[in-house]
Image (cartoon, rainbow over all chains, first blue to last red; front, side):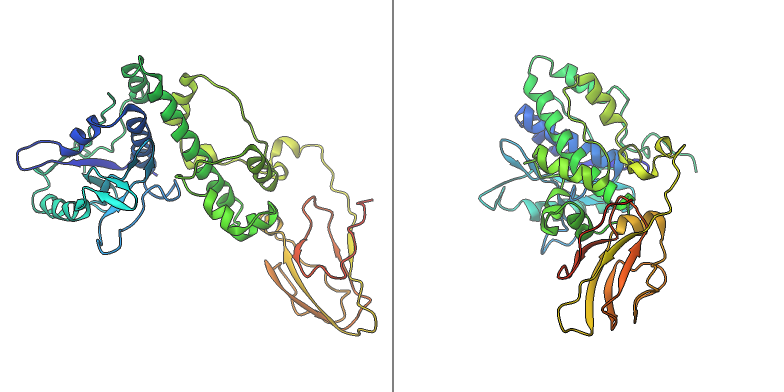
Length: 133
Length: 228
């Protein structure tokens, strides 16, 4: 299987919110996240079992990547949304603690952002930025 | 259509992972966490790849490794991290491959990460490895499993489960001709029921290292005799 293209959501001001979230992570957590994102980019969602979980119940197109480091990272993403067979878009950086989402409305934010990307994919997303330090 | 830079997959330069380790050279927690995550990803993915390569279901692999199917499901999860050497040894034996555990450099991790794919994870079982086939002459000997009927019983029903590894790689025809009544003939089904009225029946199988019968009703089955 060829590689998949990963994109990051970009807000109305042109800022890469996902990259900013990554920069706030502790390095070991960032390393674990980067390894899983590389796996997703190189091999797609099907080779690594349960690499991408979801769609989340009640949020039809929103999926999560489980990263169990010092904290429970739960980046939210969606397939496509332009080319569902070759792309993922990272929509929102989130955490889970005691089965609660942080931020609490992370999934709702992800749904909104997906719609924004659909409406203007050129302006509202950019190729995934690998943050490593 | 020509693929533009924008359309290209997110495959960074071959130095991507190396550069990440260089960027975090002063903090070894980054590379060790990366290695730990790689290990979990690699083991879980390879278990699934090897199982699929052998056309096994999770419950088939569970039977071969003497584990519960739920445990196989748990291991086939890139988010699982509580591996034990003993578990991996059991799976290695079930797949008929060797387990290799050793300390390596981070340079090797870069190489392994960049080359990670289904193809690089696949490993042939010993019997399918041409390296060990040359010069081997199959012994035309049958192994016999004798069903010992319960006392005063004229009919019996046996549940059988064939080793799916054998089915997948050899497509053997069942030599059931010496059973009184046989319901299942022809190519091996992965599992089923034999109904027989002749308590003298025995079943002959070719002497493959994997037994034909790896589960099912065990009452009355004799011990597998030695191959000679």
